[in-house]
Image (tube, rainbow, N blue to C red; front, top):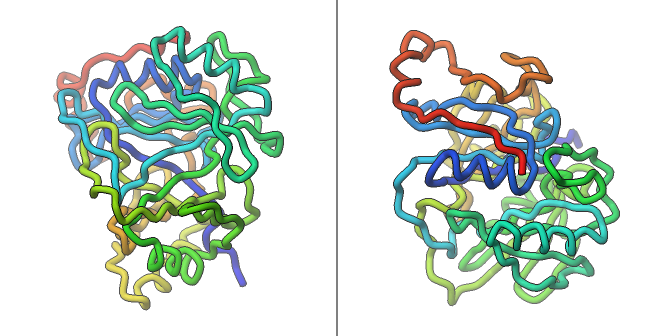
Length: 314
């Protein structure tokens, strides 16, 4: 069978102040700031992208920073935690680093024979760092974070559900995921070649309140596919199963479809190409405000409504 889903592509979340967001993800976590553009549906709001050196699928964290916006609430029907991969024996470094920025992570925990730490960003978004020796992806190195401790990309995402049965059916029967581990009320699935960046965890917790969207919550999670052909193939499979899936949408750096999984979380499937060097060189990624062609005529007005951003490597 042809591979239609090969792992995570990106996670998009809602944030508050843009500069605070940049300081946290590019400054404290040391991700590369790879694209500065706007929300295509609300061009007075930035769309900020972070990732590895190239903005590779499986490393891309993006945000809509709305400025003054009420915080959301973590709960069922949401992606509750985004976990990044760091090298083995790196958690001590990260605990000390986070504390220097007045971020207090929880004590290291064990799960599926892996060690991880958990903390929130400035808006309350749940982040985990998982220590592993099995992730060979190169890291982007910036600021005072050494190569041997730098983030590699995503490890897994956690989908919090009242009951995960129908979501499990979607992942395994339509989206080519395989069950690889189970512990308590958490089940782990993987796609493609598996490993870091291809995991999805489902947590069933019927007693938990339903989440509310706002700052510090995930807007959607995107899965990667190889081409427009594979994107249309997975779209046909989903439509045949009754999912209300959008037509193919051009997002400038990838093409996408969107639909809601049975628990209410917004899923996207996005093509791996064309990537982020379509309008900037690899060396210049993230240095200029990039707009889709239909907004270029309004560039001056758009720029007036967007606060200037500074990349401060910490």
